[in-house]
Length: 294
Image 1 (tube, helix red, strand yellow):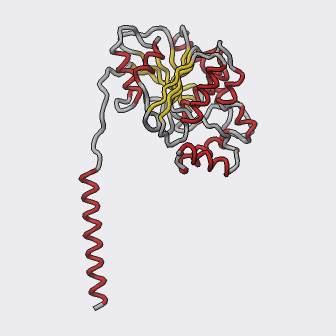
Image 2: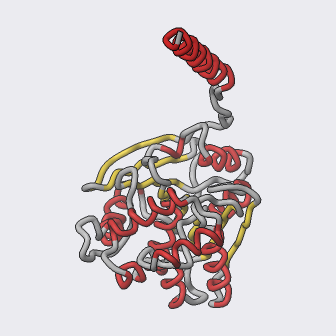
Image 3: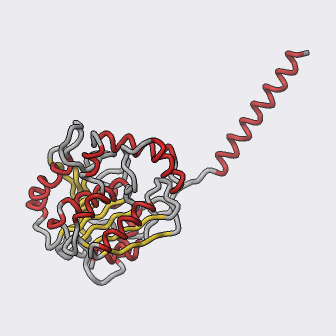
């Protein structure tokens, strides 16, 4: 009798699992919304451990070069992806009469952070990147102006590069950048309080914490690249800034981005701030495209 009862429960469980699987297959998302645009001409190359792709609009370019630094788990070929934000930027440029800049997407892999050489073996990418730019520009042509744009991890990287070498860049656009009001070397209680205050996802914050400690050995090394530390030495001659962040960013970056904007404005830096009602890397594409092409 007991064996028969267990058999009934087993059959019921199998039927329930099949129904759940069938419903999941019926209701799963299929396909993706694609952007209607003309992909830029692409030419890719390497320089040491740096991989990069050069993108030029088929109508021509305006003489500026935008160095694009991608988000985590992406690569140097993302600019022409017709399901990504970068395709929307190109689509916006193609609606305008003026020519857009040349774009160079650079990458050291799926996950990387620009830091000066320090105690960590993986540190030193900031030095490496800046040393390689002249060779890249010898191939693609000397730019009228250099600009930076990056999202998420790339947003942090462009702030580090632009605020560390302000004379080399005219503009910096940082979208949903990994800017925090605290250090990754702060106490656990401070990190927990920040997550509570910003609504950051603990799993994501742990990943950011691990990444930061891969490239910085201690808080002193972190302060060499923290945008909130770098901005304290800035002045009106620094690159113009464009920052945007979604209010409900699961990375908890809204607070730090807003603090950076306030500090930049107090120091006389031309700064655009685009707080958005949305999540991580929600972007006002029209204003971003205008900032990069003007």
